[in-house]
Image 1 (cartoon, protein in one colour):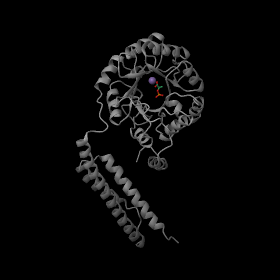
Image 2 (tube, protein in one colour):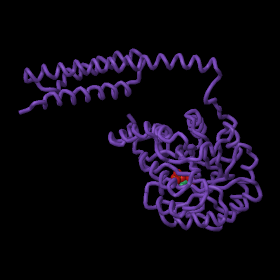
Image 3 (cartoon, protein in one colour):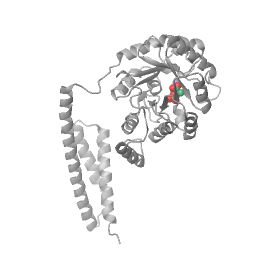
Image 4 (tube, rainbow, N blue to C red):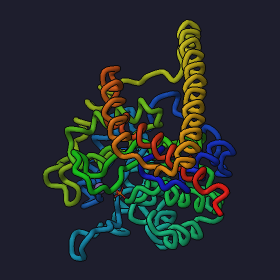
Length: 380
Ligand code: PEP
Ligand code: MN
């Protein structure tokens, strides 16, 4: 089970995996011939010189299709650099004209949408702080009615798949069929090397529910530092994400925002050249061997479930027996013994301790619930 979802949400997502969502995406609209789709550019547009210099260098990297830049910056405290505003849009128009790159900016309000359209921005994105607020997303969606422009929806700051999906649905209901989900990591209190923990299971769950929805990774906001950018980008591609949105500055140490996570266009080129692009499907020999291994897995899963069902039957018998003899359900000593014993067996078989603990707990909880049901049955 996804560790970050409540049980009710998890059941909803399992149902959505089976019946699908009614998100209506234009099939294959982002396809770039199997190559990752790359969006690159500074966190913020700071000056005309910075924008044009960065864009000129980026335009020499053939893999990059879109130039990104924040124009209105959502900062934690007022008074910090809050973006170039409308002037920035004029610089982006020059990027298009001079270097032939498409452009994208973040919008947080209907007025931003209007201005982005006025200056012919090619795509807009909705940022992580905006996606947390359905009121804001709804007002942006309203401004998009009747407009045909690709919209990128970042995940919300907090690990809430429903909120992310909800924002995508609101945009889609406004008639936008070219949507991209952007995975930029999640705020999490536990210590981690990341600025925003990737929690890969959440984007994977979204991909499972909405398979037609293209998804990019934003390694810059996940990492918050430059030494992990390659690793995170590669992992995203290995998980069949469609590309990368990354922050690039011609002079990162002097960037006005997010200086620690930006790299130069030269380093972007190196990063992209180092990425391994794997095939999604292989040749016939590969397919055959894979199919054989999958059949084996199907068989084992069937056996696993039968064994579990048999275990539950015996649990029920134990429940009846305990009830008859007026013995409590929870036998802590026995349980501690089981954990110790099964953990040792599992570890010996090369399995992860945290996985084994979660699995054993899940089985134990289910066993207790079944016995509790038996105890409550026919209670006078
Ligand atoms: C950004 O891309 O510059 C940005 C503000 O990102 P996020 O919304 O993911 O924090
Ligand atoms: Mn940024």
